[in-house]
Image 1 (cartoon, rainbow, N blue to C red):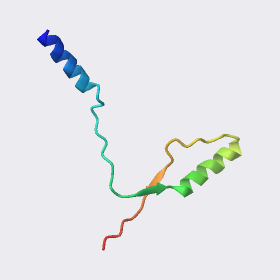
Image 2: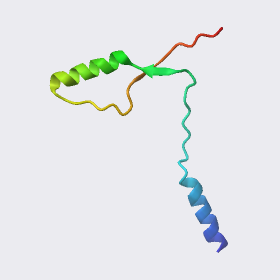
Image 3: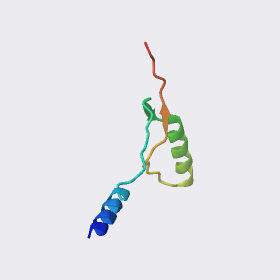
Image 4: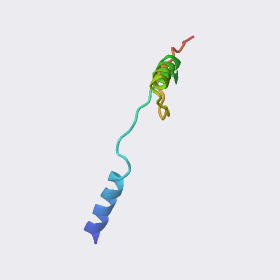
Length: 64
């Protein structure tokens, strides 16, 4: 029974994702230039675009 509990607790820890995502602290904004270029090309081909993760650009942060 102790062995079963140990295995189950390890399996629960393994199921929590296990990967950490480190994000940059610099702010990002949508890359309007890239988005408009892709949408223009899609329109010329008669294709619809649905942005799930639109391209982003990091903004410069001013330090005072």
